[in-house]
Image (tube, rainbow, N blue to C red):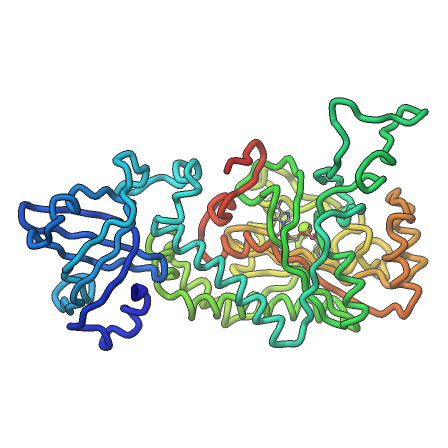
Length: 461
Ligand code: 4AD
Ligand code: MG
């Protein structure tokens, strides 16, 4: 069968000719002697219309077909200059490959996203989720393209680790111990010598520490894989399982890091706008009016820059508008992040040089001894989309910092080795893949940009 995308791309080649195509029924209506079916095969955002008549010997069978059924259609492709769609197929044969029962949950009406989450195995057959998941796929490709074209090496970092990169203790433990009968040592602590790895392990919260080791060999690397966080935040922007892109560059500082991040975001936006025009128009019309103008503006303007200290000074003047009042030293909440990027800068903005107390152990201490060379990239509608930093390359400073935070140096010997054997300035960041998709599509809930989302209290399908 010819794919529907091919019929749209090379229409002239097929017009007035016999074609065979296939797909799933999106809608069907019939009268006594003829009927219309719209069919989508998933290769293109738009469906194709099929006209059939009682000249077909299975006419009544076709008319009984339900939405969702899988069909094979043979017939002539004819131009329909006066109709909404550019062409249709006048069916000469309609084969019912797989009937759909009458209780098919997707009917030809608008279903709420909440409802569609309960049928995440079927929602990719709707317009919205066809658009979301094609954009997700293209976005992944754009990211690889961006890094590969510049010679970055793609590193596969492990998913099971013994360390806690972010030091936030938000990890899913990995164990083969029987939870109903956990072995104890003489002191009554869990005896991990009986566990698979003979030590406590967890799903990774970030590939960064392993990524850094490869940056110290390949100069510029990136990771792109799943990460896991047992954050008990039931928000529209947090998932327990999400994908992260983590480039790491050696002989580079925070400024280089921000330039890379900005170039990457602009590249992704341009790529998706060029390669998914139908989908992006759809989002602009039905999900987030003004999306295209906003994204085009982002591509053509510089991101804002502000230090944490300056940001606090700005936000303080608006403290009456916040649920959480800000003061120097506090972590920025989503409401503050969004205020900065939506009301003050009206475009993406990098906030730099956060107090060391609210950031991870590996970030480079600034000369003031109080702040670290960190950067978060905030975008309108979402808040933080990227978190990154220049890394502490001095062994003594890093050890001191780890002691302060009570990290067990033994778990990080490999990491400390990098500071002993040819240490070099280096920096990197993590882009939340799902947040990038939300930003690209205007979708407001992270659950609606992940095929099978895992969030607090939810691990269905
Ligand atoms: O700011 P984070 O915690 O940074 C790191 O993990 C660093 N190790 C990155 C690095 O420097 N290599 O996370 C990075 C990004 C966030 O900005 C956010 O976009 C996303 O990951 N993120 C989440 N996305 C969805 N659900 C969650 N629970 C997320 N937690 C972080
Ligand atoms: Mg962060």
